Image (cartoon, rainbow, N blue to C red; front, side, top):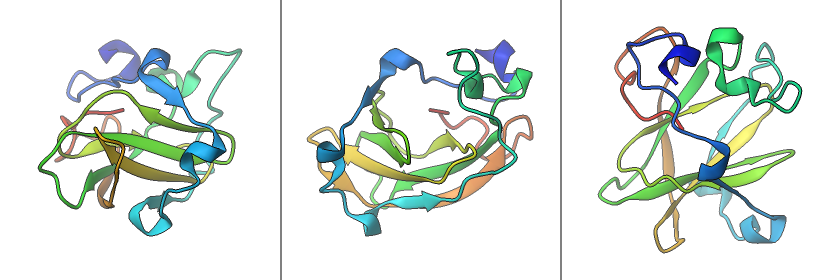
Length: 143
């Protein structure tokens, strides 16, 4: 993962297809908008997939590089990050504690957080950055 990220100075991407659960619209209909973080798409970002390969996870080959750093307003517990985009909704199975970095692609996306019991957590954006630029959050998990 370090090689495809194009940098050894930052924590590489941890997400893989088997670490995510796709959600149906009925499973996210109850989520409150005011507890989510909305991010506009980066129109210069490339497509998510190329020949069914998750191209967006490969910054070395031109995949997505811009990210947002999010955390719950109360960070004293383990939690999971989820996303709602026009074509996909999902949640990561990876438990985190504290902030996480999430890639931003060409489409708008809303991120939500849930605790281990499935209760929604209020999220806040704490920073933005770009893979390869280093910075304060370069060692923060990238999901």
